[in-house]
Amino acid sequence: MITRLSTADFAAAVPALGEVLADCTNGGASVGFLAPLDAASAGAWWKGLADDVAEGRALVWAAWDGTRLVGTVQVRPAQLPNKSL
Image (cartoon, rainbow, N blue to C red; front, side, top):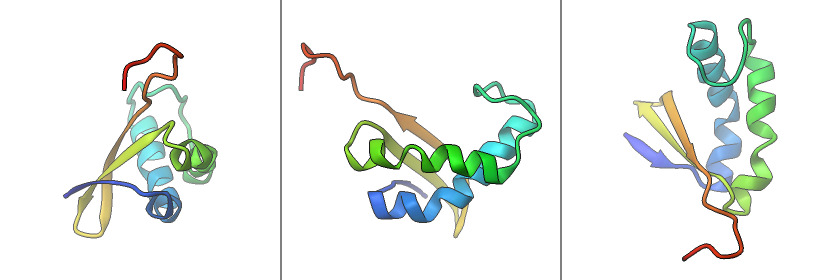
């Protein structure tokens, strides 16, 4: 199942998001981080996005296999003054 994370859901998912990010990075994915990356550091990076998620500057979706988070994507809407809504 894929769900968009609310502010509260995002906060609760930060540890799992960190695990996925660390696993992808350490497995060789080119996602902007260098291996080795531990889950705590990756989780801290995700936690740093909390204000952006709360304010709608970052939209985060999570893919779930039952209760296990297995993937994620984020979208950052344009913040330009001439953007179209």
